[in-house]
Image 1 (cartoon, rainbow, N blue to C red):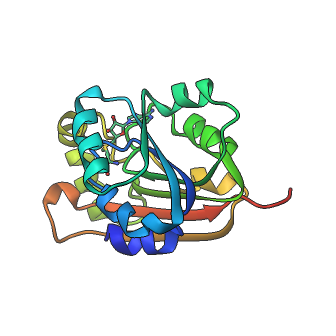
Image 2: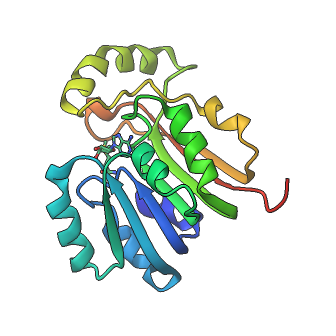
Length: 193
Ligand SMILES: C[S@@+](CC[C@H](N)C(=O)[O-])C[C@H]1O[C@@H](n2cnc3c(N)ncnc32)[C@H](O)[C@@H]1O
């Protein structure tokens, strides 16, 4: 699923990955190694850093790790700009996704790509909606604050991205816990306003 998603992303240049976790996705990023100059991984959970750095080494990726939240990173590095920004299952864990999206937009180069792969709040399917509500407390507890119902796809609509590709993927196959929709967003910041 993530491999297919990354095919649309055009991972290149200076990459910012927020909420990298233990680096489980770095193996997919390594498929695009020849197009990548540098990857800045932003991860506040220090218990995941050793594994993350081990994986970066294993896949020979030019990774630099920022220990902290994206909000802290953006405050410390207001002038940095990235060609590609990725986030996989991160906005569902942050306290204020709109503040983070604002920040991501401002550190994205003109013409750069923002790519998010997220849980999304169920809206139209009653059964999936009920399942999601029932599983929410369990998921919040075991997922370290990951709120399946936090992000609305419409949050991203107010940003004026170009070439937007949106996809909703329903995953019935794995565990009941994952019986929710995923939302994939890939968009470019316009070259001119
Ligand atoms: C559900 S995990 C996903 C990890 C990884 N991206 C993956 O797909 O396995 C969410 C990650 O986001 C991190 N996180 C939470 N709030 C964050 C923030 N404000 N800025 C950056 N990362 C954050 C958490 O520490 C956690 O590692």
